[in-house]
Amino acid sequence: MYNGTIQTLDRDRNTTCTMVPSKTFDRNRNTSCTMVPSKTFDRNRNTTCTMVPSKTLDRNRNTTCTMVPSKTFDRNRNTSCTMVPSKTFDRNRNTTCTMVPSKTLDRNRNTTCTMVPSKTFDRNRNTTCTMVPSKTFDRDRNTTCTCTMSVTLHTDLGDIKIELFCESCPVTCENFLALCASDYYNGCIFHRNIKGFMLQTGDPTGTGKGGNSIWGQKFEDELRDNLKHNVRGVVSMANNGPDSNGSQFFFSYAKQPHLDMKYTVFGKVIDGFDTLDEFEKQPVDEKTYRPLNESRIQDITVHANPIAG
Image 1 (spheres, rainbow, N blue to C red):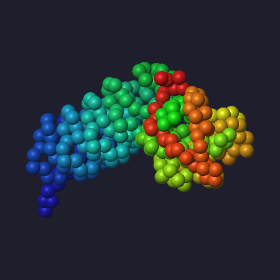
Image 2 (image 1 turned 120 degrees about the vertical axis):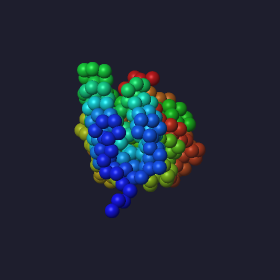
Image 3 (image 1 turned 135 degrees about the vertical axis):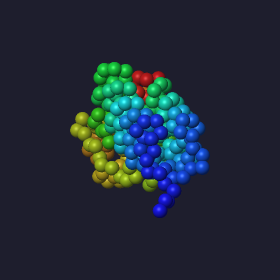
Image 4 (image 1 turned 60 degrees about the vertical axis):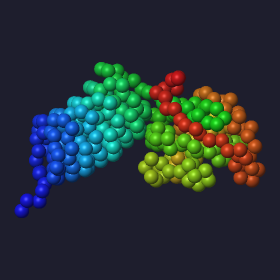
């Protein structure tokens, strides 16, 4: 008995998918249809992905659809990445989507890198994204380098620029960079401020009891013998016990050796010590060390390297 579905459909070349009935359907331009999930789907050549229903779909230009995660996805040739749902998606030009971390991504030829979420992404030209370090990275042809990441926190009292120790603490830095790039920290207050000791933030609830990692659960410490709380401006993850890291972090105001091998050191201040000075001068509640005047992270800029502008 016919149930209204079509199991195979070859639009341009070798396309295989499953479709439900559609009143209007233009295969070359302005296609309008409804699609059900298909594990194999070849748009241009060897693309493999999984799709959920989409009411509007233009396969050649200005494609709009919703996608679910796919571990293998070949956009032009050998691109491999993982994608989260995106409401707007143009496969040939001006692609807009949201991406989750992918350890391997070949944009043109042999590029290998790890990516954090990016709201705008053009695969052929003018790529805009936020990247975490990669020991091998071929941007045009055979370039090999190691990237050092840094971020600038734009706060109510000024800017603080942080260099991240991505090679020593890859898990911690991946979490931190992804939270920065997704605007998770925007609006967070500095909820604990102890003169001569430390300045703490990273909790969206502002209570000091909230915050979560990008994985939705606590993650392990990355304690290193060579990374210590030995100077002013060390940046570490806050925790309430071993392997209980989430999103909160703190700056040291001075050497704090008693914190070594208990809190993950994942960065250091490289610019903005005057801003750190201003924070240390702020009046606080003598019992809770909560600042009397709230100061917030306005937003965060992620740089490709510590000396980026």
